[in-house]
Image (cartoon, rainbow, N blue to C red; front, side, top):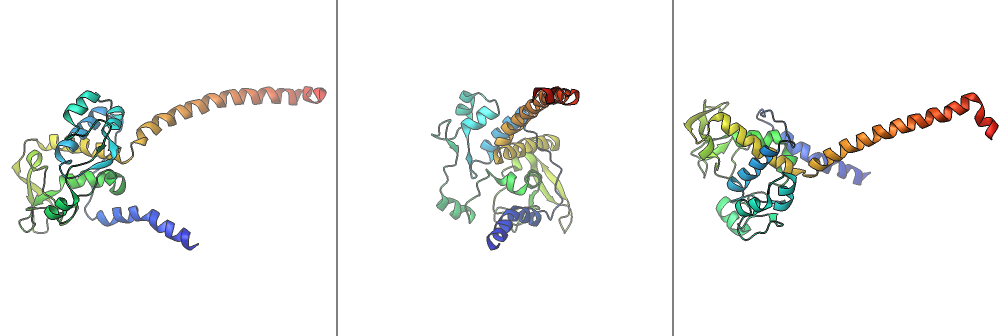
Length: 243
């Protein structure tokens, strides 16, 4: 009984983390693993903006290229980092010692971030950086208070500041290279990719599930016809004559 109770607590831990991190209303987000263009752009954004510090070590470049229907030569030339090969995991060159020295703690691997916290949390987090002169990197985040990282998205989004003393709302005080609508789309694609990385088997299991349902529907037709044929003999009494 004690072991079962401990197992239950472990199973509920991700839910507790999500609840603890949901102090700020989350932006609506709906994952779409069928949108290959979104996922491809999301992978590009992840490599260009996140992989300087964050790895996705449970994902391989080749698996992503296959699942997202990307040309492997293009991926190898434009997205694979350093001396890595197409079959390697999406890891980074930054050492744990350097990361700890620069940031106070190693930046987390993002393979399971969307699965643990939920895509809506990640999507809102990416939108929620604002100027905070008291922080080491000069920025803070409404969703993740006192976050220990710079705002690498500032060039695209621009600079946000608190609209009031309680920071209930944020306002754009300096434009970035993207319009707000373009930034929303980019962050959707990035979050969509992280949702895929968190559980890549979903892309395959969804297709298999449809095939299984089709098979069961066809099997049901044959089973129903066979049942009718058996019951025809039972009702007519021919079954008793044969036995």
